[in-house]
Image 1 (cartoon, helix red, strand yellow):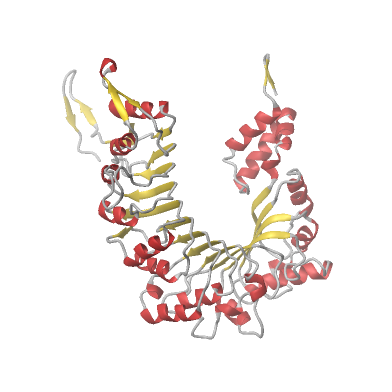
Image 2 (cartoon, one colour):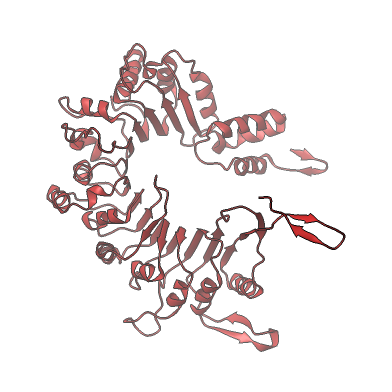
Length: 514
């Protein structure tokens, strides 16, 4: 692209387009329209967009509304073909009535969709959202009618990762009560995401009606998985039956809905009797977590976890408050203390005392700590600056820590304690001739990155950017000179002003208007 006498290489322009789209692997519908608009600006922009293969590697939010809906498989294939040899991802939603979905009217029988799945080049990831399991089997039948050797249920569709989502648990129960497993064969995947709608409170209980989680997927499917995501609020013993064959799973993500299944001692004991073994699991992610459901950490038989990611965000309105450090948390941390390198806590309220217990001094391998939307007091960093008790002299908290991210913190959070913690982790001296400026000595500290971002304050009033304290700015600059990447802010506050009615050249009176 030429602008005056300057030339912007198309490779750089393509990267600019990626940033403008907030690019992820899969572009949603709005981002797709944005990309097409970019291509219509001029030939130079279109060529630059076509040259960047990352822009075309994924299609998201493909919605098929009916069996006869027009779906141009040629356009979809043409879009993905511009990604070259990069791995490709597609997300498709099929809309059907929740009940009574016959093959002659089912969206899964859409001819264009079947042709697309037949002719598309090998994909890395395919996400399919159905109303019921019958829609899934109608899609398989539609694919086999054209090419019997390439279908979702024949194991021949070239695919690495698959996501299946169903909205109707009742149809799942009807299908699972047939002989054999509901899903006997899937493509040769190593990653599976499985989502079901939530169980209705006080209504029909599918497990009381005979549904068994062990009859959903054949053992041959589960034994090949290295990554497994389960999004449902099933009883813990049913989840255990689903996990029992998963001996090769390395990454496990569980979306936990209700805590009622975690407080029953009989349920806990039945899970232990099932004998789940996850010897290769290294990454554990728990989502929609309630404090009482943290008992799951004590039940899962894992002792080599390297990445722990807990999110307490969910459909509830109030932020969850962990009032004390549960004993099963402490037991889990002790079992995995020699390997745990990454910890992320999301959307939870913690006192300094609880956080101090949850992250004990014997977490020696810890390299990354992320506190995302965590409501806590910054004085915890004062305590972390003091050498821990009962350890060798000269030791410090988290000696191998490399990255600290404090994200979406409340506007009143003061970063001064964080900077003090970072300063005291390494030898330093002050320079009286330079206004007592801090200079660091050797050896350098292990921490190389600090990120602090703030939430926008809730309420009415004008947003006012708060200027950082000069002392904090100076310490941040000193840390940067010492080799650390430091990003703080911006930090906004609300300014409340009552409207003023002028009464004269020098007099005003506050109005009574809202």
